[in-house]
Length: 430
Image 1: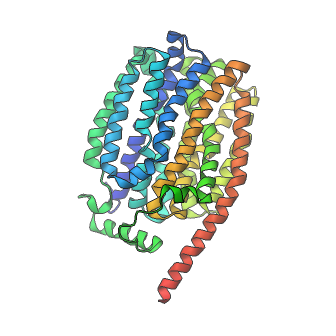
Image 2: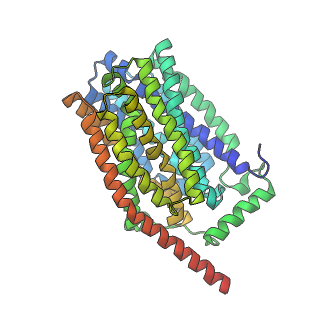
Image 3: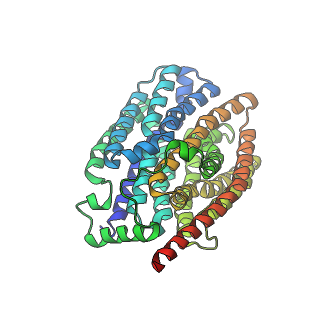
């Protein structure tokens, strides 16, 4: 499609895969009110089912980065894409609280490694000064998937019943798995369609930025990474941000129905709008970070984004005006979700190439652990207080604490950049 830019076509395919994965996530959120009614499930039990996805997701996040580094990205992604599509179909056969709980746990396990495989591919395919934009692009598929998935799922559920949405999306995913095998390759040198000019550009740019890689290096062990303070700090900051994002992903349609008295279709539309802001934020913040506009570090943009999230999510539930609330959720999503790509690009800055997917897996497990806590927390808060407000106040506090902690990452990123510059200068002298 683009001469000497095949890497962007490959990246677009990652966008499509993530898009489909989020269709398969939000269809349950849209179906939740009907499932609750049919099986007489309270908000607390439904919150537990929503959290169940993240139990399996967390398990395969934590060690998924090591698996992603060990195995072929092409084979691994095709395998997990097929498995989670099968589990999507199985969701349509759910018959009780326990059955939904088990199915969602297994479904989460199947989707767990996807982000880590994408991170590995971006690290090997994209130029160093494109990585934040590249990460932002495939991450933007998440909010786009929420927007389109909520609207499409709402139409299918209202027209054909809640079970049909899982059957249709599951079959689409199986087809995607076959397409993935044909399209994806592990690295530029493996792909028959990439030009020699682009292949050499990618190789030379990465080598110039990171230095010549040591042959057969396996990178750090899990124990070594867990002893690294930077791994813990970036994971805690990521956890603080993901508490808000996971809460919104699972409960925002229900929030607009219960707290703002919207219909099923209107709540789907209103809950989709903040994710448009999230998609825009992924592009804008990634571009600003790659260009080092105003703020010179990726961690600096993370800090600014977390600070912006705090007042917007608090005022979103305080204001009596529906449209002001919607605007606040949209701004919070722009900065909150928009900063996610910066975390993965930051890992590429701060850690060795062989450790990027591993650190991202540890970080992502912290984020998916937030996905276990946040939906259940909101469900219990809603059931006890009949209001979402206290949950959002807590998310605001966590975002503020995350912003404070991320200042440490700014110092660490500057230190790593200075060390790389010193090594380059020493190599040029020799």
